[in-house]
Image (cartoon, rainbow, N blue to C red; front, side, top):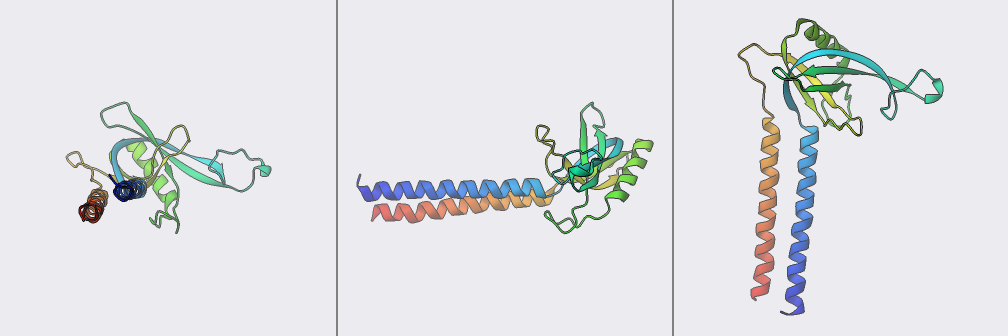
Length: 183
């Protein structure tokens, strides 16, 4: 095997690895920022004052600027699993939900907590317990008894497009580099 063949194979593997990493990063961005849905019972909610880093702060002015963040507590319909959602405005920032109604959403959540109705919570983000990160609730909708929750169809479409893009890249990369080796 010549040096040129080894170089071509190594370059091909490197390009495919870089493409794989880039496509995985795109899939992670889609998973974080696109909406997901969960069916649950709302059990309560509260407001916490947090500092600019998202840490719960006291009323000490030396802590710096603070803001109020709403939290919604839920429980599975037929289970014991609980989940806490952050209910915070996104404003004009990423992801672009243009959410400005967190106080109204909190009031709606409190009414569902009192009535114990089955709801569908639309959210984005991840719950990372170790980092004290919460999913952000975007909307809450009451579900009738026979109604089922929505599915994140746009996420599925983007996952399929990302996967197809990766296969397309691998196919043409292999075709270009394998043609050069045979010559």
